[in-house]
Length: 510
Image (cartoon, rainbow, N blue to C red; front, side, top):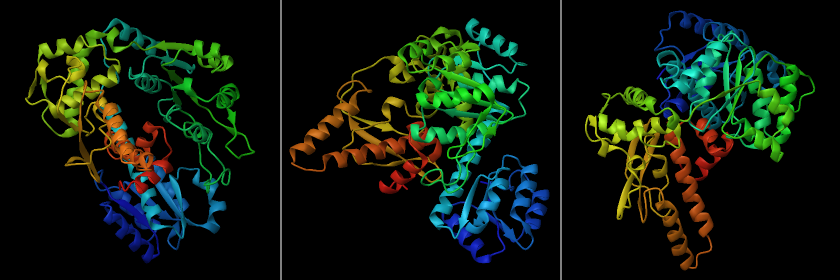
């Protein structure tokens, strides 16, 4: 892992941060002034360059703000955290809009500082993975006529700035289409910013979209740019737009109409130049009839509609996609790619894939880990493909990132057992639970049995006991799925970043 670069003329600050980060297995490299940093950047290689830059704002050898500007010219994607005294904050806010990831007011609480740096590392690594995938992997795969129609539509829209609505079932690849539209548009050099409106709590979504001013609400200690500002000059992808709260739809309509909006708690209009691509798996016309979606917003978004076919409508693509995902999984895990027999491929192509392409990708991850031989036979396919087979006895379930979704929740009464290697800093527990029906039904009956057993003892804390166990399993599973990235896990669970951090501490899941 590349080091975190720390820039501060105060030796005690550098020492404290170095020791705290090393305890977290995060390598560091320290500098006393901006000149040293810029000199180091000139000779840095891709492997020993900074993962994150943490810089003081006032130093004898130069300003942290000037350093921020120069670093952003060389490494525009590098997260930079600025350490600043409270007295500097007001004067620095406008300058920080130039690209600071976050502010760290002095004096700071060390655990919170480490958490902020780790969050920046997670964001950096996630962006690196996304960029690598976009650079090395094919944008989209498909030979079926329905997919060829989608590719032709992307081609026709390549030089257009028109708003696009992508419809299709969950897991069918709507974000891939949005990325392709951005990549082949005149805005390709601008940012592509994606937000899932269904994954963010209603009370946080407005701030996520439009940003907030300092003091706008409890906890808003600094000004924060929203996704519309982050996507200025590029493309904003609004996934699951059908789930957007009704009152926020009005604000979105205003932005789409004139490009102006106000940050939460702000009084000055902010102008943004963004192309919006929206996506939904819902029937928006029906949502409009039911009164859950604004008709004027629907017509504003529905300029060009692209329908993405479900995987069962393009079965001829299953062969190509399966081989691609097996190669991809092997590369991620550093193992030899597995081959799949024609019989197994035929069995896969007959499956209905309710989870679409995403489900096929998860199955390929699972096969890479669980298939016993180098050649995958039909009998090696997971139960959901072979058919729901009743089983009895005790089943051991792997909750690594390659486990099947229906296996990720075990009986709440069972204790964690042998950990399985997952990602650095995270142990993925193996859960074991009794199954009374098919593999996908055991956890509910197990939960019922445990609740009855606890209630029979006369305990008065059954709710707390089972809730803690359920939340522990759910959060651990999400963290394994996201390779320990807390922000992404929170988004997938539909909870806030502060909530998941607090729960991890309360449940002793560190």
